[in-house]
Image (cartoon, rainbow, N blue to C red):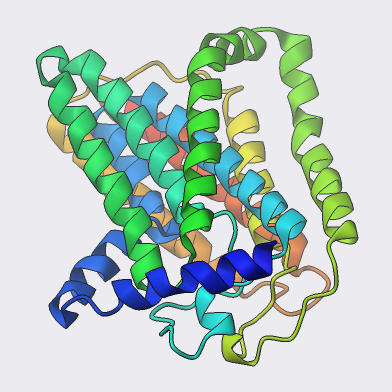
Length: 312
């Protein structure tokens, strides 16, 4: 079924790429709005200049979305358009399976939760905020079709999963707060990231051996577990960091600006410095877990705590 559907819908990718060449920079820009580096900048912006609660929620949504995306990719094990058709140009680098689209999935979950949160701060701009979220989410999603990274069905399934994540987060947000204030339940969360890794490894073990796609390029590695490890490290950093209760800061603008800059600098140094430790060896994945946990702990605990001390 998938093969026939992909053969019939690949014409959509070819048609999209026949649009004027001047649209390519716009599509590349929209695509950048869905990459990890962008989110590592967006979350600190939200933390320091909008709301810590919103930033934490955003990070939880991103982590859950990335985890589910990896698992579903292994379940479906379907190729990307440029892997199977020389008529489709691959204008980006991707080494994982295609369905569902992670960019489309995150676009729905992230940009609409931002619209929900911002509409509480600016109720008079609620309609405009949701229009902006819709335009950005559609632009990100369409860019992945234009760039040859995804079929239409990849994007549609990404939208569905992203919408379910968004609805689940909105429904469970207050429940999460109650868990974090219950010592036993909070302590039990420390096991959760390791349980997630175990489930992911089990699902991956049932995924078929990757087929050969010569057009996929030398980076082709659809069964790598890098994203799952990064997600679980991120959640561990959040769980451990939530033990340190730092009140919402209403500090003056220059402290917020300093905190934002310190967060980004720390993220860069930790990412670059620890990425070389254990690279290519047995310690690579454990160090990835530790690295992402430290990134979150730095941004959500150490820098805000230092800002509080600076003002005290």
